[in-house]
Figure 1: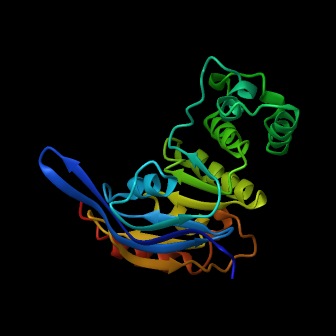
Figure 2: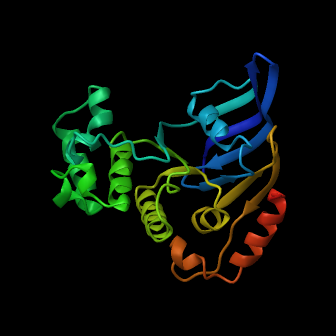
Figure 3: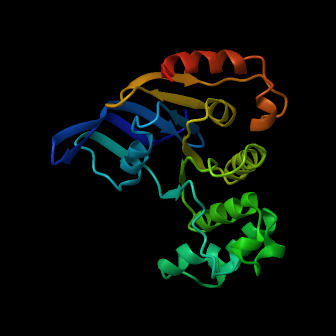
Length: 248
């Protein structure tokens, strides 16, 4: 068994407002293991992003135990590239903030750009890149800090459908290649099934864990796009859709 990278035990989070106290998370318990990809899905407003904020340390839980074994990288919905900086300057931003740019770190970042097809574009500006390339640059900016765990918060939702399929496949391959552990928040059930080894389904707020699915798909090529063709895919989709209990 791989080592536990993230452990949540009975995690609860209450917001304090002028109207009183609001429960956001309640008794959240699950583990994330080394090199595992875990998806978190739930109805809109169920607290998925709040849970990521707790894992990252941005929010302190009201009760429960959280253990994180490693350095965290955070990838948001928008790429947040600075339009006045070229791609090379953008991917060095995190290192620059940490005052840790040296020849070794620049060499490592250049290797990432080369490995993932952006070396020829490092002097370009964000507006000159496609949405997928921008997202790849944002990922490299995060990988430059050498995190052990990646948190992805609706990281592909700003892209059109075709680009979203392609870049989610690409990001999955990059993170697997770099041997990262990942927690992926998404509202897209198909995306979660295709990308993740395990899916945690949250209820409406206050969020509790309704179910945890271990995803095992039969596919020759384990890439997310190809795994959507697996015979088990539709069964997982239908089961999770019923769990979400979404009423339109």
